[in-house]
Image (cartoon, rainbow, N blue to C red; front, top):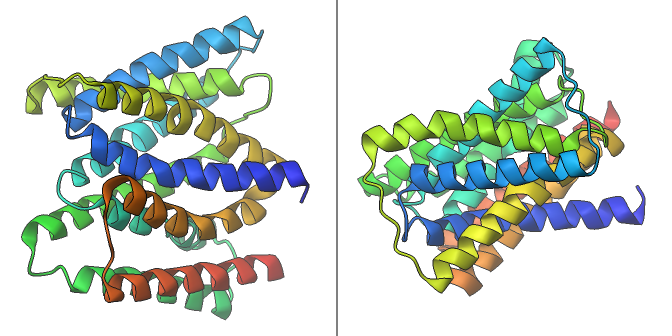
Length: 289
């Protein structure tokens, strides 16, 4: 793996982890669905305009357009919609820990639906990782609002698992990557708009903090993060790319602590280490195939 791939992978892990505490700040100023609608609409249009300016291609067949739309609906509408809603009920460090087990759920559903090989080592990694999540959940069973937030995160995790499987079917290259990023964000915004209109009261508490948070989420997790994600998937493959998920819990916990003052219990920390060990076992299994 080249140095540029390592730096991009670490950068992506940091950006992805930072999205959760940033979202926790955002929902204090604006309803979650409405915030995401604004974010995806503006960032999606900007990405398409920038891609057009750089001469990127709009030429997609019907199947590719359908996959891009479905990906945007699931990833941006369902996954992020559920995560932002969950962050009104739980700390951001809990949500980022749950989201970090994505490689485990992708491996499991690839095994179920696509008959991808999974050895005993990989299966053990899956069980160990899920045990870490259960450990984090068990101490919260008496706090119904937190359990609801965790349930929303788990539903979001299922959504992003399927969107990750879908992205492998889309023909993404350097000649259309910004257009793809923009189109899938527009698809997500169109899904979120009616939900926001029906269930939310549109109000925004404008401040410097809100403006900075909005611009950061729109630019980094919104555009730069997906571009890195799509690029690394093509350049180094899903196996090597997934190894950077080891860094997400550490970055997420650190950012949540310094930005929001959130802390974890001893049981949470043990759960994090169990999840990371599960990811390690799964990664070892992938390398052995």
